Length: 252
Ligand SMILES: [Zn+2]
Image (cartoon, rainbow, N blue to C red; front, side, top):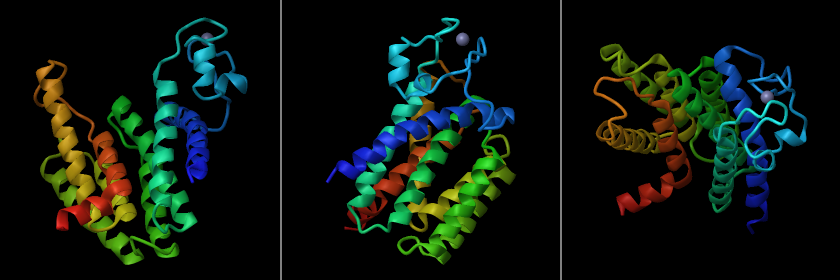
């Protein structure tokens, strides 16, 4: 029964390796296909086995084979995160009567959210080249693939959630950027009503919690910019995986 989920989880490790490239290159405006991956310190071109997720990091002991400069823990971290979330997404999606195309779409959703989260942490930006396609395939998928949310639910949730955040961004531009508005619209398109509420609520809750912890740890001060994208992504993935269960439990 878990064969399919484990296969998808292993695929997630490879996708995570590609997401590392996306996270590094998209904010720099570089192509994500060419040239091939290379060491940022010495330019050494990485061979296929040096790109192999997690295993290569361990065999290389976290160093570039050519110049010995250390490789960030974040690379295998992103790979493991993607693998784990792909496994969970497959497991929870397959426990329902999901259309295979919708499972695929859920995996694309999770992958783009991981990339956006790390780009937001690095640059405080959520690039249009990722948020707008996310919105587009969310709406398109809802119309074309049977299941939840329906097409119109998707459109209305995108407009409702995006519109609400847009007003917040107009009133409070220091705290909320247009990137957040587009991301929330995309989350609305993917999750539909009422799951989008859960996603935003959980995201804000986790964000506030981590904000308070960082404040007390002296790592952040009041008024300092905090990226909202990663928290929204956490809320959205929770809502995607457990949304209906949490809602059922709440209404009961
Ligand atoms: Zn190197």
